[in-house]
Length: 79
Length: 234
Image (cartoon, rainbow over all chains, first blue to last red; front, side, top):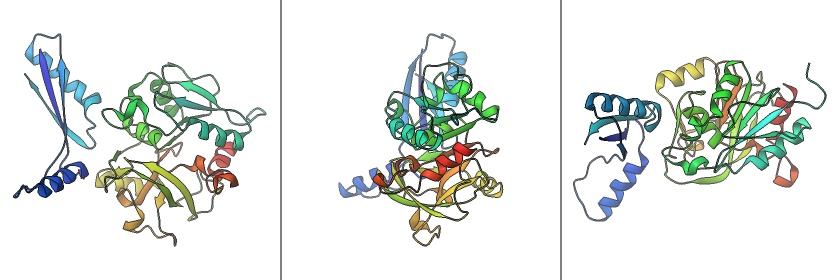
């Protein structure tokens, strides 16, 4: 079973990387781009076959390592 | 009473740590004793270690987040126990990031606000001198320190920042030449100009600048030496 963990900077946490991407898009001529936020996606191959347990395990992994919940939020989906 | 030979320090080395030699020179100069080198896979600290030091560098290539992987490595368990016993811990630069990631200090270090890696000298103000790290400084003293980091923008929520200030846990603030903590002096964007913070019991210090790189006139100054002399006398 595969889990996809999406980690994003919390709202209110400065995201200079997102800002830089936004500026680069503007210099390419893309108009109308508002705020840009950059995060990361982590895919996990899990041996667990029960979807509920797999999701729970991936969430525990996110809390303990994959995300720093001081500055980041995360969501887990099974894919 | 400590035996002759001074404080026993242990310097932790993770894959990608690169400032341990400078740190060992500074520690040996102040304590008169060569620190022990502790490998990250160790599951116990050598008996009698007074001070654990986490140095600068790019542990695990800064993968995932700066300090994130190092903070979960085997040696961090005995280091957390050392902290719980009231042991002394110093974390500089990547070491500060590791202490935050490990939950031994609050908050986190974000990418510098200007996105640039900053390799330059900064000034910081010593906020209090009644700690094991700063007894040999004057209160309010402005000291020079080299800094070299891409992720030094200290962040914590407003309640945590208020608590740190209220409990006197801000060790050093970035300041200008006159000693004023202006917005412009926090080159990396750090909240409330925070360059370094203490744990609740004032026995754990994390800071971004490198006092170990200013401990000899040959390095251009000795502003960092009192920190190590304070520790040696602690």
